[in-house]
Image (cartoon, helix red, strand yellow):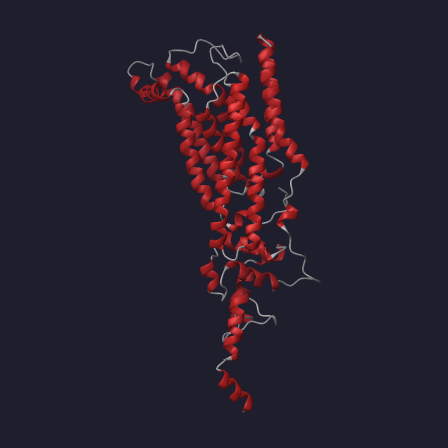
Length: 402
């Protein structure tokens, strides 16, 4: 009776104290759950959740992977509260601790050890720009058929270099292949081709031409805009480094955040900062390429297209390839439709089809069409990225280094 009297005098209920400690830590020190209702056995909700996500729990190397996987399956902090945990991270810690393993559990991974820069992908991101610069130089120094052969060989080499850069390092997909990945790459090639020849074709179409096929020179029937193409090729390097910095700091936030809302709020400025960093680097490259080649820098078209391609690749890297494929397809179709309506307007009785494009070209120039379309698409992807790339599941640790 003396012990009960002493407990009554202190005004502390030991069961409530144990429950409070369980709510704060998610898992008690003894490995058993507190509270009035049993947590293990048939009435154990956490055990049922572990059974539902058994594969996720068994392959996880740390609680962060379980938290990211739960968040990807729609488990929120409010859902975790039903399991007597303050957030998904705390619930994942208990699930990770209760997974049966042989021997000791593997040590926790550190994002800084996984995401160190590597020399191979750093050099690969420089290769497209170097090959594109060599191609432009070769085209400027040759004439006739030789010029066309140099241009064709150079474009093939640049395409292979870009393909290699997108398959290694921060710009490579970390979530496996996606059905929309090949469509995204195909539309990217189309958009880059339009950046080089599309504005010249549209200008010639509005003026009643063109009078011949492009010959790869700046004075032909379709003058080639080499400055935007060279700037975008050189931008592979800052795109990779911006994506790498976002991945590094997002994984660190994943280590320190204690809730999904806190993680999202801390990652959103990182995403906007990585995008702004890339856009600043692209603007500087556009200015340098325009000055070096003696061409207009084409800031509007180059920046909007570069921002669109960067956001599309960033979403694809983190496993969201469907939206970029759809958006790039819409942009590519709109750019193809612009000169097509001008040509269709030459038919008797169909002049009204060319009126919108001709009015836009008269007001903003040929670059106004792709700039408007790419700008709207980039804004759409930026809003989409701010919602998807701030999820913990988008930055879950993977075996592929960045």
